[in-house]
Image (tube, rainbow, N blue to C red; front, side, top):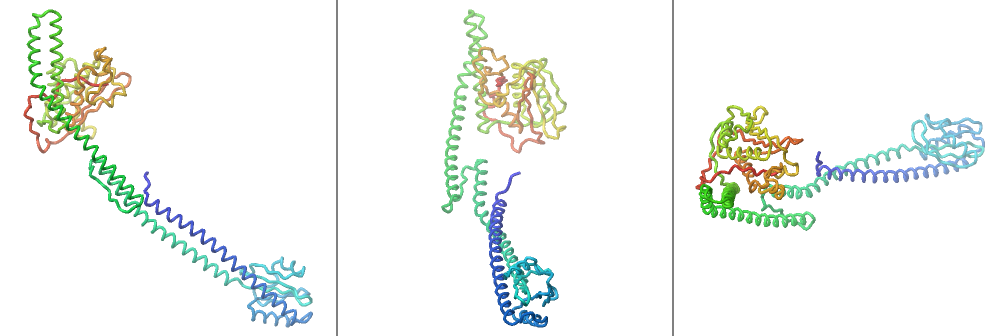
Length: 500
């Protein structure tokens, strides 16, 4: 499945923004948290030392519980600290109902035994505190609890703000990515559309050249390419048109002398009895080659008309099976061909062109294949496709795979030298049987009917199969082409010049 570039660009922008936001937020939160907690520790330690110094100054040795309670209350009121005192006899007092000597971290007692003043962060009664501890010798052990609730609330607020800013940056980056993708993809879409227009033959297509960035360079290069392509194709079209005119003109100019030559050859053939053996062979060769040359000229003229789009079509609704049977009977092939002709297979066709198609395909099968040669005509409605089918198959050696793609090419020769030596009967179909236009004309005739000809070669020497599929149109085209002035020229001859 093809992936779209626009969502990928937007996702890339959003992903980069998300990773950046997470990195910045995590780093910022970690640094700020560390600094806030460090200051809270320092403040708690400072307040604890001050309170211990005050206790050492104000409280007598072995003070009464009431004196300790008053001192603790004064510290709480002044510094906001919760105080837990543990007297030398092991009894304790507290300024908070939720704190007692039981929640004091054990490591603080061990530190006090060594005469140190220490601070530690701990959770007591489900709340975070910084605990500063110290001992006034002969008085009591003091534990000052400084609440971190405000610090925790500030950190939560900071975390929420960073998360919100990060989410906003991701959304903003997505918007920026969409705008950036649009600015980048719009020229790309224009280039794609321009390529499609070139593909269908609109060679005048050009891209707008705006700016000085890489996309402008791409547009400039595309326009230069399109201009060169237009110029080259224009030259090729002019050359092709000139070649078609040349072939057409030469064919027309050759028709008159060829007619005279053919007539003279026929007369010579009719009077060959008065010639000696070399003369008769020369006369026969002249007759054969004159007719081959006449066939070539007629084929060239027909190809020229097809290339120029001026091929004449005389549309009639006819029974295709009857047309095929008549074409076989006219050539004397009815007894040499097995036919399977479905009755009442009617279609709008040009009878002369169908006759030419049948003559070419069946003639090739008889000359280059092996019996049995089978001709099938049926409708294609059973396959769900509107149309009719004409199929010609033989049991010969078939067509080598490397030549299948070139069967309908004009003047295609498989191995002319070999064919000349072997007389065309080697299964390499028709390199010497003529100029190589018969199948090309047959296919053009099929296409003039809105159809086509395909060829396949059955494995194991099972012969070649030519299939003609004609459009099942319900009526003739909107405009019937007028016949050309030289309508006496044949549509094509019964050519058998198939290539392998």
